[in-house]
Image (cartoon, rainbow, N blue to C red; front, side, top):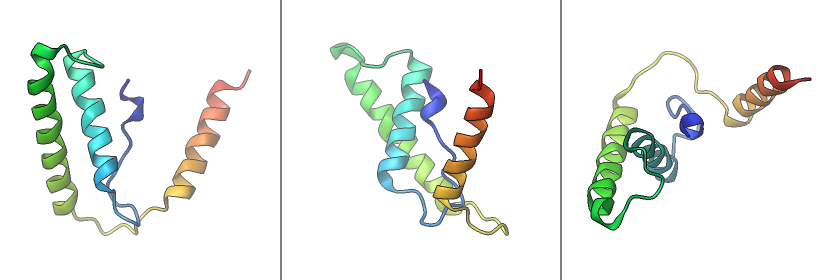
Length: 89
């Protein structure tokens, strides 16, 4: 489930709100064990997703690095090459 959480720091352009929200949702799903919570747990689940997204956005804004920003397309190509090598028959 957490394989969908990607590194969001130090990319050009910076991570979008949608990317941060998606990562927060995956994180809360993982730690709660719910992909879709019951009605009784929906409110707490939604609050947790919003809180994790807000804290994550704050973290990404405050992090500093001297490394040049990474290119999303180049990083995706590297990940595909690693996967192809890992899963080659």
